[in-house]
Image (cartoon, rainbow, N blue to C red; front, side, top):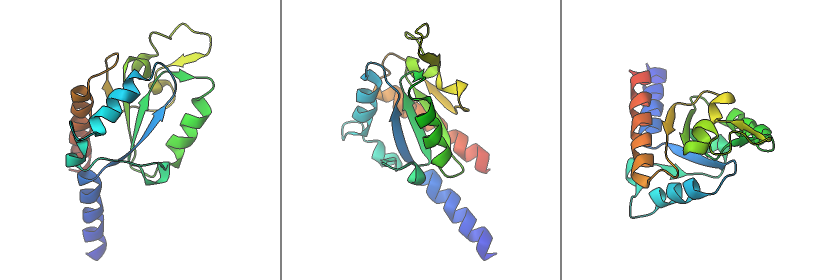
Length: 148
């Protein structure tokens, strides 16, 4: 009974206060600027409990921007593996979704989904902060459906 109550409280806390880690794999940094704009007081994603963390061991959500390159592939996999379960991934921007416009470069592997499963895609070059917030809302809905 006590264990069930603790697990329910833990699930509630994860849903109400998701912590994200941002990983930039390269590109033009436009998506990074828009993600950081979503964290500022103008858009204020903290009202949803979203906090940016510096360690993958404390994060629930991996927010990736930029195309996956041969240089960043191993680091990105290491960050993903260090995150505790349950972990979620959001691909922000066209580069993270498909690798475009760098898809034909010799060192670009492609989108994030070539390495591990992605839960939410936020397309755009760069996507507006409103679109990023909508992506987080879709991810929260998916998290609630998995719990129920």
